[in-house]
Length: 449
Image (tube, rainbow, N blue to C red; front, top):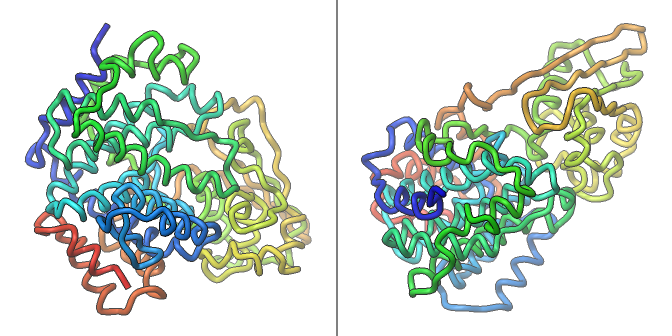
């Protein structure tokens, strides 16, 4: 049996910043900006205040900044809070079919990096390797998602452990132990979408991954073959249906999965992005307006309603996983922003009326897969006209990746109501040159109110 756990640990411990292709490092800076923006704006989202109170009450050494409270706590507590804030926005940037997110990794890296006073190169190095770890696990364990696991957080715990081990400069043996310890803590359930428990799962992944790395650094151990063993993680979470397990090592870094991360335009579920974009485009072209809609039918595959499962949302989080509300927002709002999913908009009569006109049709014959299928949207107008759209991709999704400058608008939209302009501008320039930043602590101080 190939010693996958130990081989991944070897790759993590031996890879240096110079080994990472320039395009991967550059795009990682863009993803860092996107994630940090959500970490800063997320404290205002539903449920975040509860997490802020929780980590404040738990206390701990003043090691890393909790962006929602302007105070410091333990590394693990700050990672829990900041990752929860980032996820609460539903702006997280994902890659598919592995179904993992860059937003899981960065809060952990920034918390530990702030405490260690790590430089920017080390930060980017840890991100790329942590992301590759969780992505390769996600690709091999796609069956886990079918069975109901939220792979984003399950594999994310191990990705955060990998990133933490790299920042801590652990050797191969201790890195393998970090991965093993994290495997015992990985969890997440897809059914939680639309609830606070879904939001905090990313926080758990960041906290648990760092806990694993810190324990390993101090000599704690785990089974060295925990991923690939017959009773190891892969077989347990997939029911024995692991895919292309040899590809985990053979395909590692060829190319890095960071380049498959798509940046979201809208603060809601990934699977709603192209539907919103198509609706906005028709509206802006003058072909579609709220008052001329008779019905909107959206044909989707069998996977879609297992995530987008709240047709009539009761709160802000459910609205982020509601097909009718997303389409109503696209038609009624000048720009689809976090405020589009507010309780005020949920309860607004115009939104309620439009939601009733949206019909989801599940096409079982299209199969069950998160990607590789295309929704068919039929807009039936009162005039009798039918408009049909089949959006395959949307802006910011691979291969059409956003540049750093193209992502600034998203970052500013997150932080301008929280930070003064000079801090916004300074943080953008620090992130742009993150590879030459001497101390991540300086970045965290820049974005602290």
